Length: 385
Picture: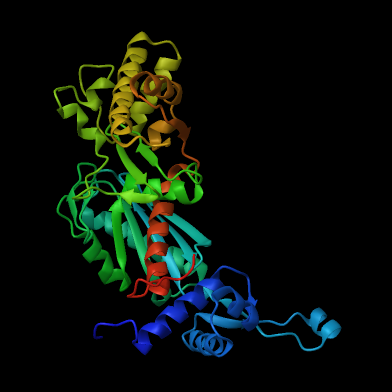
């Protein structure tokens, strides 16, 4: 397609189509008169656009209200956006499991699925488990793979814009993996790959603890914590996708690794051994002095790492998630120490979405992509939001 200009009829059609579709998507159903009033377009223009959207499968005539018909005569035709015209997937690829969530084009969840995976599993095995989880989910929901319009993926590591994992210490064989390219072969639709903490931040802003805050830091708490940040409601990835990698702060003159901080022996914990970490916290609750000291060291490191990010970004809210968020003793010290170190302490809350945060955020990224396709035009003129 050549470059569109302001007077190009095809551009005007796309603008009008985006405006009408946006109006219909914002309501259960609407008449042509109602759409005309909301959009400011002429009645003939709205009629033509609606017919075109019906032909594209994105709009359908809504059933008439029989009761209203008997009372008032033949009612005006009503139309609705077909959220079932396509489907979206949000995927999580983690150390111990892979998970999937399936939705329609309105983001309404149709089904979920997950598979356990060994932390030492090679990349091919992990991807096979992911494909199996997706295939089973689609089969249960009765959705054809060809109906997928976009797939979002959340995974540990620093992720390039093309979906290549530049660095990941959490998953074997993940560094250098062309994850986006591999998954596009399976789905044959746009695949958007994002860091897991970034995806979780998006999820909490969409459906979780941060729905009323646009400046948010989400902390994926663990032995090697990561963080995602929204600034003005938009995901902040940094120049190379490495923003929020607070797990590397111990390298700045603090040689002790997080795995050693939480150890009650002379041997560091394995970074992915969640059970071992849970046992240390349990011993601390029971009064074991060595375990209590280890927990205190761990919490102090986490607090300092988060404080560094808070001082840099000045968020309104810090949301704490990840497996360590479920362990006792994390939230109160975080509030206390942030108040001590930060010039303007943020609010602190636990994740509402829990273990569903990463896949839910990946789903939101897929939904954002489809919305851009449906509503964006190559013009400074945009649909009314």
